[in-house]
Length: 112
Picture 1 (cartoon, rainbow, N blue to C red):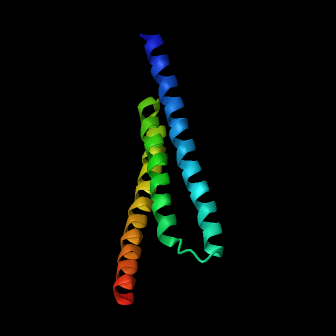
Picture 2 (picture 1 turned 180 degrees about the vertical axis):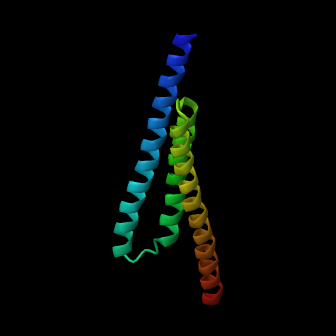
Picture 3 (picture 1 turned 60 degrees about the horizontal axis):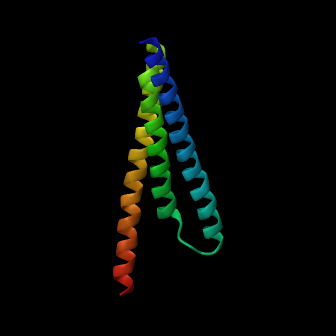
């Protein structure tokens, strides 16, 4: 039974690391792409907001996996606070995405 717990712990830890690296790569790569696009006159706010939301989802998934192997209650409190903070960031970002999409839609309608 102890061996199974060790395997589960290692699998969750590796999965968490993979998810967090994926989230980090999404955020960094999209930020660089948007930074370059900004100087070429590409409207990047909506694209960056969508990529940030996706990156935050991967980071949150990694934290949720970490709750499986948390050993102390204090660790769960910290993880809970991180998850809540990332959820709030994602929620705010989704509202901004909606506003940007509506503004873009309105702009296209006025151009026609």
